[in-house]
Image (cartoon, helix red, strand yellow):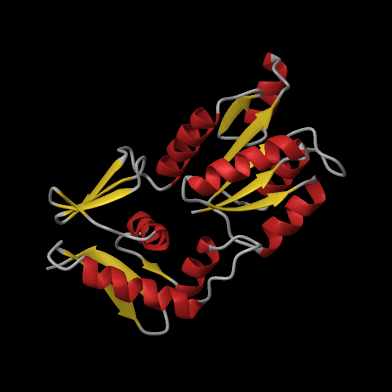
Amino acid sequence: MKILLVEDDPTLGEAVMLATRQAGFAVDWSRDGVQAENALAGYAYDAILLDLGLPRREGLQVLRNLRKRGATLPVMILTARDTVEDRVRGLDAGADDYLLKPFALDELLARLRALLRRAHGVADTLIRIGRLSFDSVNRQACIGEAPLVLSAREVEVLEILLHHAGRVTAKEAIADRLTGWDDGVGENAVEVYIHRLRRKLEGSGVAIRTLRGLGYLLEAER
């Protein structure tokens, strides 16, 4: 999953970026509102963590512009503005959640996971298809009761496919969601991860199918 962090405080930004990356997210970090809008215009994200008091363009304006374009990705506001009026303005502008500073990083991650579950229409933290289960909190996949040994990248690819189960996911979209601005995962690497996952998912009742020219489809075997 790929997250855009929009925060001008360098200390807080570093802490949030480190915590989200350690939790398995690909993260881009914008330091002002204009940079954030440029990032949103050029890249696909699964969620945004958005500060309000930004240089060059206020976070609330970034949010309003995003919703005017019809974008539906979840947005969590991170701010020290704690009045009821501030919260109402943020939520009415299109925010999905509101977290006051200072906050615990564990709470931030829990709220972010909840936002992403809702965005993908998943109520439970445990996704099950066939004999395969995936715990989105602990990021552990199992076949039956047996844990799967997966690399961090394999977990990321599997999670992306599970959240789009039954639908085709383009190879380019997978590569994009695996990388931040400082990373370099290409489409050839995605093919390698898919190949490894297919071997490790044998006996799970789940298949990853290749639709040539379109992408990959994860579904229960028939």
